[in-house]
Image (cartoon, rainbow, N blue to C red; front, side, top):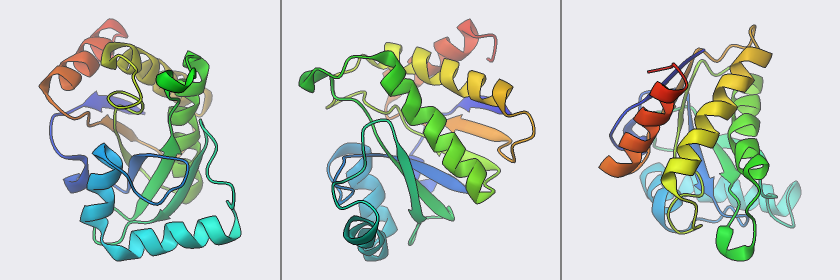
Length: 178
């Protein structure tokens, strides 16, 4: 699996699946979550409401992931994951890594070949973007090494903003990916 980081808008990526840094309610929010919901249109919210009504009445747990259709986005699927919130005392990097590995598990289960991922938990959840980048890149590499026959060929990190992109670029270089 190739791992890269690109600047840009995750909602416009031409990939099979876009990962959403969701909150546990799956009903939209700010940041990446809000941008994805706005770009996807009302069908995404309708699917998320149905998930809450049927499979996830208590919401999506931190570190887990679930897929829906992508509505009006160029992707086929949105994979929602809930990152740990440092402000709520969720400081375990393994919980953060799980967001990325579970998202890749779900993508592989869907047959997705290309996946765009944000800097989950950076920003309003209080994680330093450099730490998120290190954890995310390491998690993606470990997942790829453990799943050599998975259909996922590309994990593309699309963090918001120049500083976040630079943090991911540096993490990729440090990991020998860049």
